[in-house]
Length: 307
Image 1 (cartoon, rainbow, N blue to C red):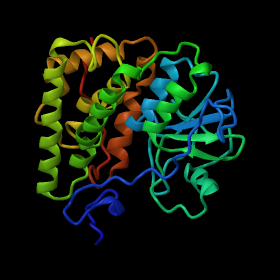
Image 2: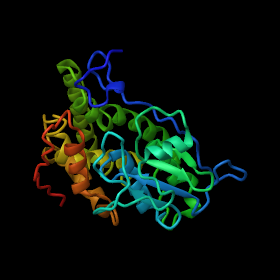
Image 3: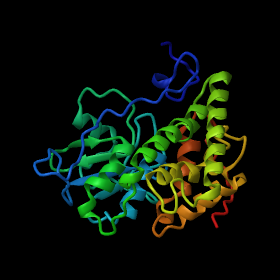
Image 4: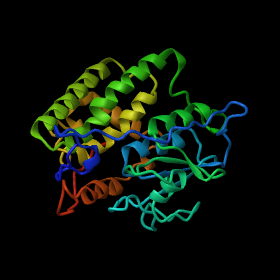
C-alpha cells in the first residue's frame, strides 16, 4: 500500500482513500472469577484517557455512572497530541502521570510490548501490579467495568441485561461501523468517493436511529443501556466537531428531534455532564489534525442547547 500524503494516519489509509482503523492489540481481560490472571481488585488498575476522545470518554462515563472512582484511578492526557503522541503535562483538566511518571503514553505501550509500532491510542487500562497494559479497546473496557467489576461499583447499573444482550450487541455493531467510526471514515477519507460513501452511510444510520427513537425513550426501551452510551460519546461531539471538521454536514444532531432528546436525556444523567469537556474536544480535533486544519484555529462555536 502506497503512502497517501493527504492522510492524517498514513498507515491506516487504503489506496481507495478509505480510512481503515487499526485494530486494538492489547486485549487481556479483567475477570471476577477466582484465580483470574487479571482479577477484579480495587486499586489495582488505572485508566489513562483523553477527555477529547469519544472512545476514551466511554470509559470515563462508565466509571462515573457505576461509582468506580475509588476502585479505579484515572489520569487525563493533554488534548493536544504531537508527533510523539499523547503527552502527560499539567494543564486545565489534565495532568502529569502520577503512577509511572511517564511523559508520553507511548512509554506505557513500549513497557508492555517493546516491539509495538502502531498508533498509540486511548483509553488504556493499566495494571499497576504487573506494570503493563491490560487492554486498550474501549468496547472491552466498558464491559469489564460494567460486568466483571460489578462488586466494586458503589452504584451498579445493569447496562447489558441478559434479555437484551443479543439485540444490544447487534445494534452496537451497526452503530460502530456507520456512526462511531463512520464520522472518522468521512473525516479522514482522502478521495471524494470514500468520503461520500462514509457520509451517506452515517446519515442513513442516524435517520434509522431517529425513527427507532420515535416510540421509545432509549434505543432499547425505557432504560438506557450500553448501546445508548456508546452512541452518546459520538453524539455529544457531532455538532461541535464532526459537522465542520469532518464534513458530516448533511444534518446536525440539533436537526433530529428524537436524537436531540436522547442526547439531552443522557447528558443530564447525574454525573455525566462533568465528564464532557468541550474545550478539550475542540482543541484536540482542530489543533491536532493538521492535515485537516492546517491553521490550527479553533472555532468559537457552536452554541449547543442541551435542554
